[in-house]
Amino acid sequence: MFDYIKMTSFPIDLKHKNLKFAKALYAQFGGPNGELNACLRYFAQSFTMPDERGKRLLKDIATEEMGHVEMICTMIYQLTRNATPKELDDAGLGCAYVIHGDGLGLQDCNGVPYNTAGVGVTADYKTDLTEDMAAEEKARSNYEHLINLTDDQDCIAILLFLRQREIVHYNRFKEMLETYNNEFKS
Amino acid sequence: MESFNPGPYFFYPFMPIHKNVEEEKKDIYYDELFSPELTLLHGNAYKNEYVPYKNYQPTIPFNKTQKDKMMMEVQMYFLISHDLKLHLDIHPKDKEAYLQYKKYAEEYIKKFHEYEDKYGPLVSIKAGYDGMFSWINPSNV
Image (cartoon, rainbow over all chains, first blue to last red; front, side, top):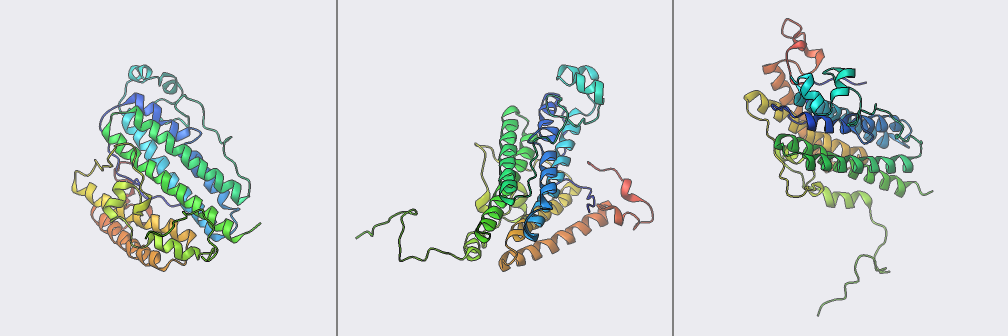
């Protein structure tokens, strides 16, 4: 089960409105390489890992990714706080405002609704762990693109942290795959 | 006289080919942890895993008040024990990592309680301790 801890993984306290960048950040919320997709991918795959090590690793990382979903949502919320409908419209969030108001719609940066079509669950540890490694790399490059898009030093600090976490997860998945490959010669 | 160095891909029949995986990992990871504070700053516990992006320097810009600083301590001890946990999931027999994990996890619990005693519960199960339902106290998240 999950129990909520009332804190974020990294301190977040953004004071200034930045609607354009908030729109871009939706990519990491409901986008194909976003945190939500990562979380559900590892969670679903964890049940058919070959042994307890893989199950624990995937569940632990899935749990951490859920915390990253919270971080991205906190950023979007703080960056769009107190925005007027006109300001939202000017930043390209007009349609999002019509449908979701000030709320955080489950969508990517273009307003495409969140979907899990890109999530592969195959019960084959080689396939699943290789997909997880690719997912982490895709998320890492998305974070790098987000960093390139902004000059806001506070946002960059948070995104650098999230980018480094993707690198750590990639290394763990790679290690797990290598460990299994050494043990199960098939 | 310099000896001939064949490089890593040269097959050298007198060397043992199979290495003990656990021992090799220990060589890489032993005693190369960031301090808890630097772990939160960089975003990872093992020094050799840090990969900088371009010329960007990692910073933690949000540590103004005493409350922020205490929260940051909770976050840094959580992250370092979490990173060790991910490593131990794969290498549960790594004794050195286990001892480090135990040390930092205990510190995390200590800091967690210190924060809760001062600023209210972080988990809902503790919300009844001070005579009212303090779970709904304001927070950033």
